[in-house]
Image 1 (cartoon, one colour):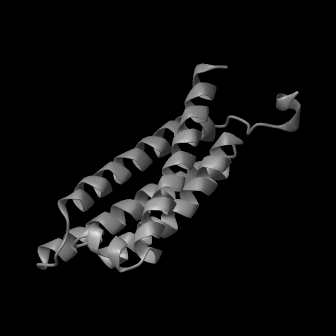
Image 2 (image 1 turned 90 degrees about the horizontal axis):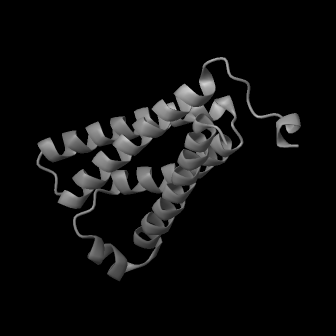
Image 3 (image 1 turned 90 degrees about the vertical axis):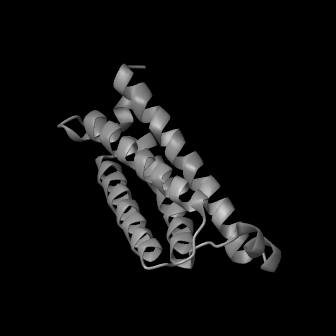
Length: 139
């Protein structure tokens, strides 16, 4: 496997794994009852819903990257931008005096960095005139 091929393979696994964990954790708080919500502390509902729904998109992007589809590069860029926007909205919430958990700051920083990295690696590996993986390449 070439160096770029390995990188794309690795980030696709990261994206899918990250998505599945995001869905699991967000779903547990959203649908797990009062005890789950209480254990989450001062979570910010719009951030929680954004992350939960984004988890499904992470899985789609990861699958697209696994298959080396160029549209997945653009989806990764959109995820990175949307995450940064949600993080900025969260920052406005905090600035306005809204309650929050420090772990949300850490998690949103991590999410943003992960998707910027996935976007950059996939952009470099798949978008610059390189053909997507074809059926012939799989033989």
